[in-house]
Structure formats: structure tokens, C-alpha cells
Length: 210
Ligand code: B12
Image 1 (cartoon, rainbow, N blue to C red):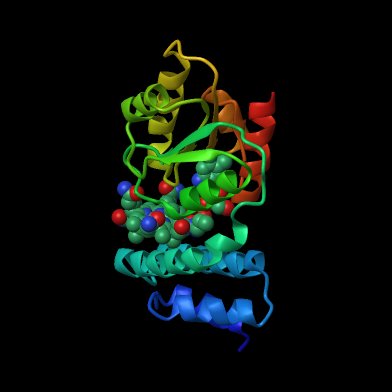
Image 2 (tube, rainbow, N blue to C red):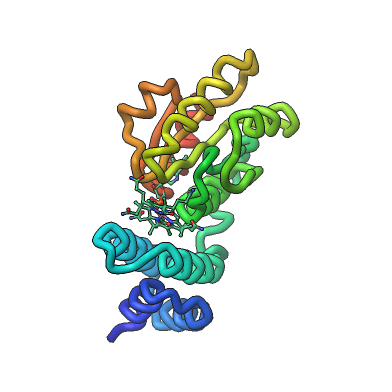
């Protein structure tokens, strides 16, 4: 089994303690940070499918998520600081009722490396809290909302509408997460959408540059 395959299997099995060492070994073997990240994302896909099939349950999903987060910590320096531009501040969070944060944190990491300062509000963020963060932080040029549950899409819509009807200007809103499509993003009034963390960073710069 290659090191990458081992990382993939151990994330799926939720072996959080083993992951930092294995990810480091995979890097030392010459694998790119991008390919290791991709393997871990695939593990989460498998975990999701097994959850849907009733083959595993919430605790196992949580352990896999913890394992992946440990791996991302090791990879983070390999994605950081590629840009010298400054595009202002991005406020990011997972919408109300939703506790999924791995994708949001990856998007945050990539947007930061594209040249934004980040204010990460965490998970289960109410529309009012997003709005407060736009008011309280300097030079907010982008608000990024993540949502992984179909049941929290109404909260995403409410967040976008709260921001857009606030009278505040100077920032764009980007949305994403597994159930979000370009059509849904447009229909709830968001300025942009991206399907993954890499394209989120590209889209973020595009939106802010205007
Ligand atoms: C790990 C996980 C959990 C963990 C989350 C831990 C954590 N710290 O995040 C825990 C155990 C807490 C959990 C709980 C639940 N979960 Co869950 N979970 C998952 C799982 C397996 C992986 C999610 C993940 O991290 N994926 C990897 C990341 C990298 O991908 P991503 O999040 O999609 O992010 C990428 C893109 O979407 C995009 N993106 C994400 N955010 C943003 C934001 C912006 C602005 C942009 C541009 C792009 C973008 O870029 C990211 C990186 O490339 C998914 C299955 C799956 N296939 O996604 C189910 C899944 C999302 N969960 C599901 C469910 C049902 C639940 C529960 C309701 C289960 C329950 N009965 O309690 C609860 C809900 C809790 C809550 N209120 O939020 C369902 C959702 C079904 C649906 N359609 O609504 C899924 C799809 C599993 C399934 N197949 O049924 N879950």
C-alpha cells in the first residue's frame, strides 16, 4: 500500500493520532500536498456514502472528520502564503444549524493564501452574526458562506438576503458546499459560487477585483 493509500484508509477509519505522521511521511516521499489533500477528500466521500448506506454512523463520521482535520494541519504550511497581493478581509462561516467545517476551513485556507485576511466565524453562524462581523471588521471585501446540509439551505438564503438588504456596501458574497450549485447561488442572490476550495480562491479574487 502506498503512503497516500495508507492516509486515505486511516482517515476513513478515523485514526486521528496516526494521520499527522502518515501525512508527513507521504510528503517526505515526494507526494504533493494537493494529491494528499485530494486523497483525504475522497475518504470523506466514501465515509458519506457508507453513512448513507447505513454501514457507519455519526460517531464514525466524526472520527473521520477529526482525522482529516489533523492531516490538513500538516498540509496547511504547504498551501500558505503564495500571494503578495492584498484583497482585504474575508469573513467566512458555516451557516446557522450546520456544524460541518472541514470544507469551510479548506476554503478559508485557500482564500487566505490568495491574499485575503480571514475572519473565521466558525460553524452554526446566524445571519445576524455574519452581518455584525461585516460591520465590526475593517475593509471586508468578501463574505463566504458554507453549508453542507440541504436542510440548511434556507439559512444560507436568509444569510445572503440579510447581508444584501443591510444597506452595507463594498463586499461581495460567495457561497458553496456540497448541495450548492451555481443556479442555487444565483437564485438566493449571492454574487458567486465555486465547487471546491481551489476554485473558491480564484473566484474570490475575481469577485473582489470586479
Ligand atoms: C464529516 C461529516 C460530518 C461530521 C462533520 C464534522 C466537521 N467538523 O465538519 C459530523 C459527524 C459532525 C456530521 C454530522 C451530520 N451530518 Co454529515 N457529513 C460528513 C461527511 C462524511 C464529510 C463532509 C466533509 O468534510 N467533506 C469533505 C470536504 C472537503 O468537502 P465539502 O465539505 O463538500 O467542501 C468542499 C466543497 O463543498 C466546497 N465548499 C465548502 N464550503 C464552501 C464555502 C464556499 C464559500 C465555497 C465557495 C465552497 C465551499 O469546497 C470544499 C473543499 O473543496 C459528509 C459526506 C460528504 N460526502 O460530504 C456528510 C454529510 C454532509 N452529512 C450528512 C448528514 C445527514 C449529517 C447529520 C444530519 C447526521 C445526523 N443524523 O446527525 C449531522 C448534521 C449535523 C449538523 N447540524 O451539521 C449528509 C447530508 C445530506 C444532505 N443532503 O443534507 C452527508 C452528505 C452524508 C450523507 N451521504 O448522507 N457530518
